[in-house]
Length: 321
Image 1 (cartoon, rainbow, N blue to C red):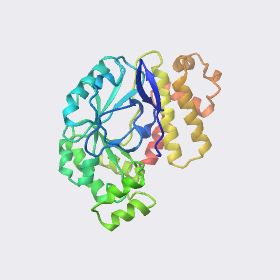
Image 2: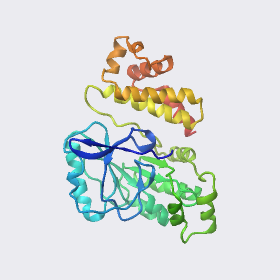
Image 3: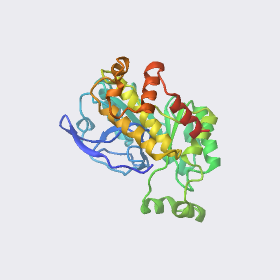
Image 4: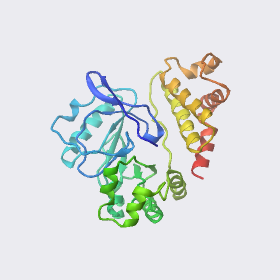
């Protein structure tokens, strides 16, 4: 999935970046506009890219709103000397009602009370899979698929087995967007075959789809649901997440584009709607919403009646089959 630019906004006087929550970017909605990132290579989940290295002395607590905001806040990895400060900020954001995703490097201890994702980029670049044993049990692992480097079948198989042994339950794979400079950097001191894969291969050896199948076969969850939220619009957020996940997989599976775009539009309408979707369904009034056609209405009906979507389950089975 190509990276999309985030929009700078101000939330309670603090400049943050807001983007559309999508399954291909781990449902991130907010991220710091500036952040003292790790000194080692890392994956920028919010932009689906290799993260830039930045350092400055500002207090992390001044970079994000001090009160809870609606949507997942993403905290990229930091240098070791700032981890305690990052963890304190994450805890305070969580206590204020925000959904916080903290990105860790292998071996880091997860902060209490936060969702965590472990970035495997540096581990995979060094091919030192022993580092995976330090991955926190129950954490989500992030696996970037880089042609010729991290997408080799044997590496994927070995890495997935080690993640299972470490107690990891879910893994998120993405194909980061690489510019020419990053490709040259990744090709340094590697074989000519890696150079060819980086600059000339049409696709990774192991694609996101085949990775999902391998992960599921190994017993790891390859899909992530949108985080649940509390409040009067919780049903709207849940519906938006299901519709966005359907749209994402529908288009990846190259089903009719028009229908996939309809699901995507519906997810954005549901996300912005200020009326309770589930209440409208109970009253039999979903038809008053112009963007709810027959098929989308069936998805919402099943979601509110049964708590899930058989269409989403079908698409996930097909994608990771």
